[in-house]
Amino acid sequence: MGVTLAEEIMLLSLDDESGAAKERQAAGWAVAGGILLELVMAGRVTVADGRLEVTRAAPTGVALLDGRLEQLAAWARDGRRRKVSDWLTKDQPRAVAATVESLCARGVVTEERHRALGVFPVRRYPEADGSVERELRARLRSAVVDGADPDGRTSGLVALLHGAGLHRQAFPDVPRKQVEPRMAKIAEGHWAGAGVRDAIRNMQAAMAAITTAVVVTTVM
Image 1 (cartoon, rainbow, N blue to C red):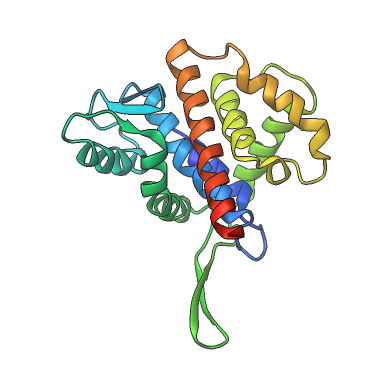
Image 2 (image 1 turned 30 degrees about the vertical axis):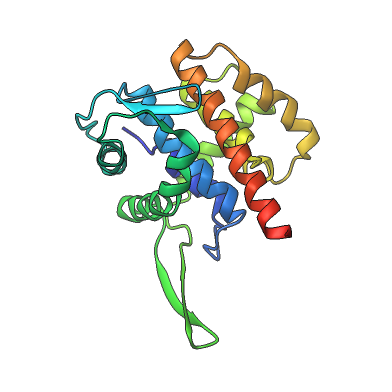
């Protein structure tokens, strides 16, 4: 398959030249959510009532997805249906690292290492192949700004971006108020089966709850 939803979200969150991540926290939740949604669409996981269950642990053939599926299956080995929010919180750092590694392996970004103030190690991921992001942004613009009918994968991507509040990363040159209603409409549309739509709603709710908790903790 081509790049995954998680890789697309990661690309949108990275500055093309510096390789620094923008909206790091929200993008991280969306990346983890993107992997989970891919697993739902691949028939490996179900999500309902805010909880998830691994229904089939067979590999998908996509290294990024299979690595996270293996970890998820091990985490839920006791057969209990675990909370979506718990998994996203647990997996978010690893999901981001695995996604960036996958983009590097594809040659889409390159890894640069240096030390801030000569002491603290810092990694940046500037773009190496801009064609992937150009196609991605053109597809998003067609669906959201121009009003074209999106395919299922693009709809899922829009739903994740909308749920994580990444409107500016997706459309840096368009005011949020112009794209948010259309993104919400796509996210709520009947572009997928009931199970996938339920998964999207559950993940959006989980990301919103996590983000709110983080903001409250930070303020306090």
